[in-house]
Image (cartoon, rainbow, N blue to C red):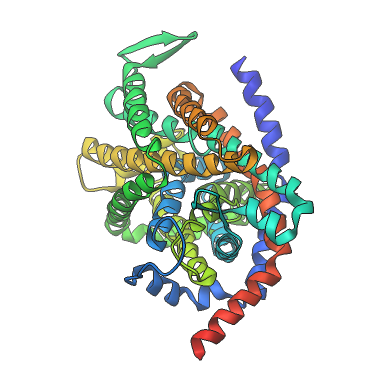
Length: 468
């Protein structure tokens, strides 16, 4: 039964993430890059400055701009950076990392645009809360006649949170990492629904579910307060470990970069298979890149809309740094470490690939290296669970309205989804997430490109005002 389900999911995934969607994502990013005259590169120093400036509360909103960014990063920096990169390289070869870079550079313009629109068209509820996201800039920016498109996005957003990025992939990645560290041979296991599971999977899953419930039931302010502490600390720790791997194997870096570029264009494939190898690398790289940094997906704007600012451009600049931090920095560290050590070509799967890379590359005992990676993955994935609960809850609120009892019931369902996540197969989990990601991106990309004139106009007015 499981094999049949996986085959069906893979066929659907290949259709959703076929050439049309890849072309759509890259085309929208390219158009925005051209219209904004490479703003993501020209204004990155300014964005970086805003990121670390001591901003005072200067407008309506729920949290500070930095807290909004950390909330967005909490949802993006997760298993995609550790497990997702590994699965992309195993499936598409080292070249998948190159296409992740391409998608990220182009996608930064998309991230800037969608977060700008989120602040400009955000909505104040009757009880005074500030909410926003693609559903509101579709409805307010494109007009009420397009509310159906906003509803489609919101429905898919609930699905992505409940069945994709938010729950199954994160908790599955956490419990797999814990299991690989404490009980790799599954010698301490029991049978559930005809499949054997280690007690470490069950215990870690229950503990993470309890911790997630305690934060999720506290709302956006508790989520952002946790994210502001955990995300920067764990991101720095992870990057330092990866830099250590690269530093200890610095002589292998040129060959690794060469392998990544050659593989990206199918130059290492057998005669006649170059185009096919290139398409697989591109498909896996772009899909995992979007999974990781969520540029164009429409999730980050939901967090950006809560920022206490009256300047949509300023928040757009701050929010676009998330794509650079997530993919260009964190994912690159993972990918290069995996290619340098050759861990991608050892017949391993999922988190075991990155674990092997850390064990081979770090100048520490293997157990210590595996423990460091496990802890990074646990905290990364845990914060992603929190961030996506907020995203999917706002999507549901847009559909049904502000109904506290129904929204609380959804939180409980979400927590239950976290609980059952460890018992899903790895391949099925990632395939479901890919499918939902791709479908969710479509209505958002349509809205962003339709409203690109607003983005350009707002950007021009903001920088003209700065000059004056």
